[in-house]
Image (tube, rainbow, N blue to C red; front, side, top):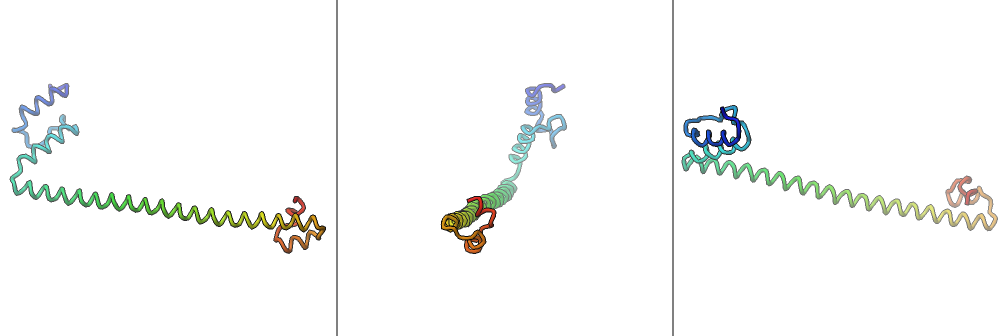
Length: 132
C-alpha cells in the first residue's frame, strides 16, 4: 500500500513505463506534472515540434490578452484621474464663485442695501445673506 509521498514516488519511478495513464491515487499536481513530462519525452520529433508550436501560440495569446488587460487598466486609471481632476477644478471654480458672491453680499449688507436686492445680484438666498 502506498501511504507516504516517498512510497508513491518510488512506485511511479519503478512502474512508470508500464502505465498508460495516471492512477487515481496519484492525482496530485506534482505527479500530473511528472506524467506530462514523461508524455512529452515520448513524443516524436515532429510531435514535439507541433506541441511546442501550439504551446507558443497559447502563450503568445495569453501574453497579448494580459497586455491588453494591463493597458486597459492603465487607460482606465488615467481616464479616472483626468476626470477626477476635471471635477476638482469644476468644483473649485464653483466654490470660488460662491465665496466671491458671499463676499460681495457681505459688502452690500454692510453698505445697508436691502436683502432682496443683495439676493438678486448675488443669487444667494435671503436666509444665507442673513447669516453673513
